[in-house]
Length: 484
Image (cartoon, rainbow, N blue to C red; front, side, top):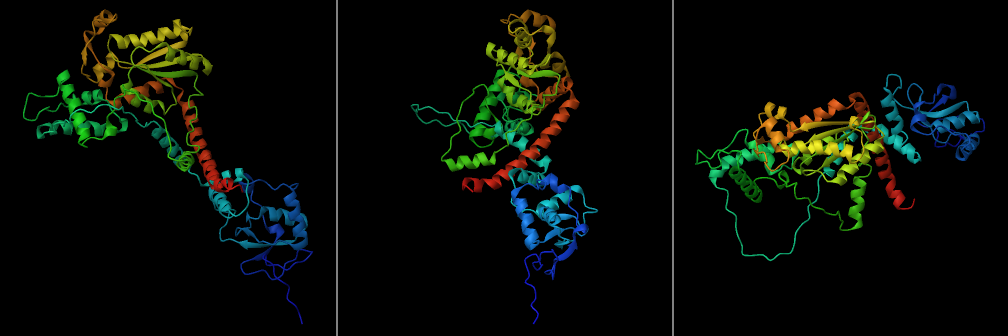
């Protein structure tokens, strides 16, 4: 009686010469010379290390028992899974090895498609952390990762407001409802707010100046109550904004008073919520220094908190520092700016300044620049100061309405009056999108655009790598927490 050889998982009977008998269904014996290792495998996973004790043990096992698990190869013979087994079979002197032939052919496949095929057929292997990262890089779309990174940054600009004091509450008072006569003005206000949605929150002053472009009636039954650039109209607007928010007709997120800063602390109900938040934001706080290749150190200085959001939205796209001075800037922010310039090691300091077009606004730009020279010893020929806004050319080009008369109490009043007259213009007179455009143009005019684009491309690539690391870490985290 003839006894059939016992089959192994590989589809071969054990034998010292490495010959194969009766392969299992779907498994074929292929001459070792017809099987080719894929070079892409070494870039995705670690190359085979012949001195690795685990590999030495594998070679010994193959010599004794043959290949116990079939390799997976493409239809044209390229290894998709089993590079270590192939190397061990070669050292063990096997003439053929059991393989599973896939329908795919490497010939005709793109490099990316083949690498993804490698990854999909090696998910079961025990891998090092950096191998898992390289696997995730195959799946990550760098463009999507970069978009998510920038969206996370934008959300970080939001703040949680926590305020309130115990006070004695007087008798109840109700605000007047918004009458039908106010609805035309309310409609105009809501349209302004919607048009400026990208720059929320807006200040009352910004809404005020937008209404002047197409003034509504403050009271529909009073034809002469046309909205104007005066205190009475402005008070009517602030009152309407207040009542409209309380009535739910305007979003609370649309309007803010940036001149009343607040401080809050992020707290958690318990550690689990904190861990979830940290995991969701893990490696999403990355900012590449997009200015590191620039020949000059660039800073933005704004006079008013009311334009802070607009300026920051532009500045974050370039990673340019922003100082908001709230009028004449105190000495500490000037010192900090001078120190950042010195630490940059660059020869040139470019200041992009934004302030009102009035005696003090013009003085702020000159005073800040002079202080850097006189107080902090930065050579005048190293400082290049640009008044981005507001200036006489912009007032004329955009036909901006004056906000008030220039203050005669200013020490710079006479010089300003001699050159520009008695009217003054506020920075908020520029529409938010126009102010953003003017700032962006000024930045583009002083940077090396080619160097900037290179840094931005590198940041996009960085985002892809970080997302791969984040995904690999998140997958490994349960085992790490369990002590595996």
